Image 1 (cartoon, one colour):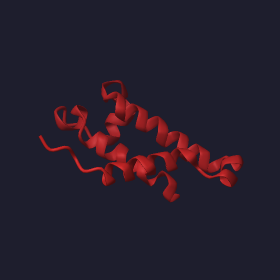
Image 2: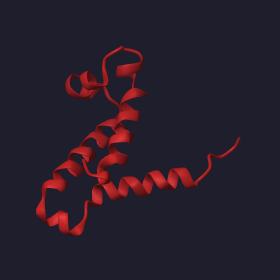
Image 3: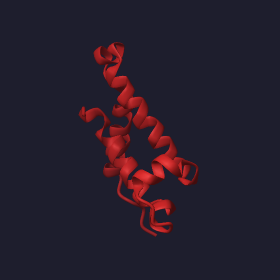
Image 4: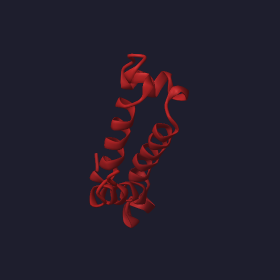
Length: 89
């Protein structure tokens, strides 16, 4: 798979692993994303949709020339998180 969707996939995996569906209910992440999508946090649902859009845009000939903007936005967000240190209390 192209590296443009890697950041989204990593964020989705992390979100799924930290969700109550996996942590408390003991389901596999694949089960949560297929059968228990309504139980996932909104952030995981949005990441799932963004990952789908990113993969779909990889097949769209128009976005092949322009570049995959969905994945690029996720990469920029990830870099901003790394660049800004967490606030100390």
